[in-house]
Every structure is written in C-alpha cells, then in structure tokens.
Length: 414
Image (tube, rainbow, N blue to C red; front, top):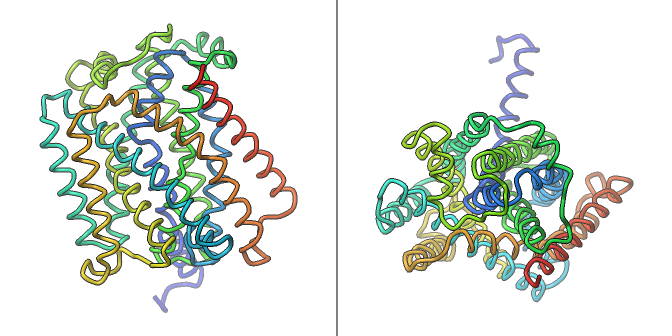
C-alpha cells in the first residue's frame, strides 16, 4: 500500500469509507418495499389508476429528511432512537415509544409472513412449509452471523425487488392516461383517503426510522461517515419509491383502475403474470414480493428487540454471542415464531396490509415530533438541526402528520 501513489491511496481510502458507510440506508429502504407496500401500491393502481402515482415521488424528500435525521442522531451520539428518548424525555415516554414501535413492528411482521405465504400459494407451496423455512433461515442467519453478514444477505435478497421494474416496462402504460390521472386527487373520497393514508404509512414507518439509527451503531460507524451515510440514505429512498411507483404503474395498466379492489395475492399474481406469461410472470412477481418481505421480516424483528432493550437501558448487538445476550436473541426468536404461528391461523392479507399502513400513518406524528426535537437538542452544535433547513423539516413533518391523521381518520370513519 505504501508503494502506491498518493492519489491512488487516497482513492482507496475514500472507497473503503464509502463501502463501510453504505448499507443501512439501502437495507431499510429495501425493507420499505415490503409486502405491505407492494400490496398497497397494487391496490392503489387497481382501484385508482395513476391517481396515487404522484404521491410516491412526493414522498422521497420526506423519507430522506426523516432517515437523514436518524443518521445524524446515530452517528453523532452513538445511541439509538428510544435510548435518546429515554435520556432526554424520561423512561415513561421511552416505554410509550417502544410500545408504538412494537405495535408497528408486529403488524409489519404479520404482513411480511402473510405475503410470503401468499406468494408461495401461487405455486401450490403449503403455507406451513414456507413459515417453517422462513423461521429456520432467519434464525440461522442471525444466530450465526454479525450485523455485516446479515446486511450482505438482506441487500442481496432485496435486489429481487427490481423485478417490479420489469413489470412496469412490460405493462406498456398509456402516457396520456398517466398525465390525465396523475394530477386528479379526489381528496373528498373516503376510499381514496384511506389508501392515501396506507401509502403514507407504508413509506414512512416507525420501524424504518428506528432501525437505521440502531443499525449504524451496530455497524460501528461514527460521525466521520455522515456524508457517505447521507448518500446511502438518498439512494435508498429513491430506489424504494421508484420500485413502488413501478408497482402502481403495472397494477393500473393491468388491473384497470376503475374502482375494482383486490381480495388476494393470487389476483395480483395472475394480472402481473399476463404481462410476461402465466408461469414467468407469477414467478417474477413472487420473487419481487418475497425479496422485500424477507428483508422487512429481518428488519422489523431486529427493530422490535432493539427498541425494548433501549427502553429498558439494555444494549444489544448482533456482534454478541447468543449466550452472552439472551435478552436480545430470545425475544427475537419469540417474535418471529409467534408471528409465524399467528399467520398460520389464517388472515386476509389485503385488508391486513392496508390496515397496518393506515395504523402507521396515525403513529407518524409522534415519531416525527420526537425525531425533530431530538435533532434540535441532543446533537453536537456542528450537526444540530437549525436554520432554514430546520424550518423546512418542521413544515414538511407538520404537513405530513396532518395529512396522515386526516386521511387515516377520514378514510377509516368515512
């Protein structure tokens, strides 16, 4: 290394730092393209055509702002979201935040497992076999590896979501219809508002905010990685919403957008299958759905146990041996197995996925408010949220919270 020219040494050092910082942002955004997001986006296209397409791109700045603040908090304080809430606002609020996160995580876990069962049903694979294989695979990966190995596996699996881009291209959408629909948003329609809230809640989820902050800490990164971690976050946010928009486009082009709702994974698989061919089309759809669901299953389980540990003042890490951290690996296993048993009992996936999204939309105000207050108070002065950018974040967070509450409540009660 010492024999290399100075410019090549500097390049290698920059590349090493880039590779170290990249990962958590991509993982959490790949997890964001999970079963619930896929189903909600497909339902949006099937029921409302392209009328919810613009929303997918408007969510990119919001997602980046929220996740970028978690990056700052994690890298500059070395502490997780709930841990900071506990130290800044007290144990009671920390436990309340942990409960909110647990509620969001468990709903998401059920959605992912149900999505995987639904994808398997397209090929006649028994649900119990899929759930058993899933539990064994994830437990084996987590119990035998560090965060770095878990991250590598989840990134590889999450790339299967690129299958949805193939679907969107094959759908050959009518550009004139897109331009006609995209600016027409019937905000007085309760059904539209309900799906709008679900889209919002499957894009900015409490567990995604929490996971990235804890993952950065578990990876051993510091404030010097902040610029590159921001790039990681931005790339992840754009990647996530491009895939989600692709699902809306494919569903609108194939399922009509004339108010007809979806009732099962099979409906989506059959419609998307017509784009490429019955066998290959369903396979591509199943791979895309399963990839996001697998990543999200790992992420939500880790988020849940990290949150409880931080609320109780107990630090956990995947770098620890299972025997040295039973309070980390035990709850992880119980949450995973409990979710599998509940899903095995049978649940309507379409309704569950959209309901979980709406629930997340109703929880967003608390999560964003605490995130904003922490970024304004606990960060070192040079990294603290302030000035015009703080005002912009405050405005966007407020508008998002109001929209989430209005759409979620109006859609649920309408």
